[in-house]
Image 1 (cartoon, rainbow, N blue to C red):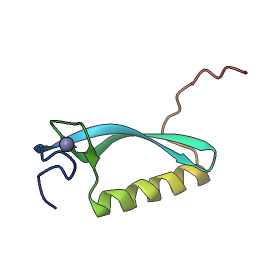
Image 2 (image 1 turned 60 degrees about the vertical axis):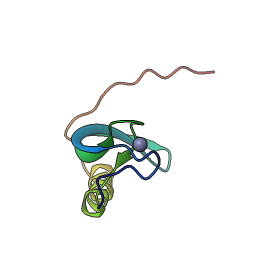
Image 3 (image 1 turned 180 degrees about the vertical axis):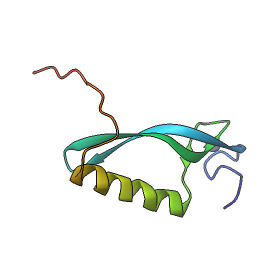
Length: 77
Ligand SMILES: [Zn+2]
């Protein structure tokens, strides 16, 4: 993987980020995911093996008890 941002040509730096992914209608947050983050535009890149692990973790979480849950306020419209 190149260390240059595909979008703006900025430099990428390895960081751990928090991400949220929808799986159907379920929203799941993942913490400390290793990513390459553009220092210019903030675009995040994930290595293929990391992407695979994200999917794997989501599958696991939906089939088991998660490590942690956070309360999100829901407002009825
Ligand atoms: Zn960029």
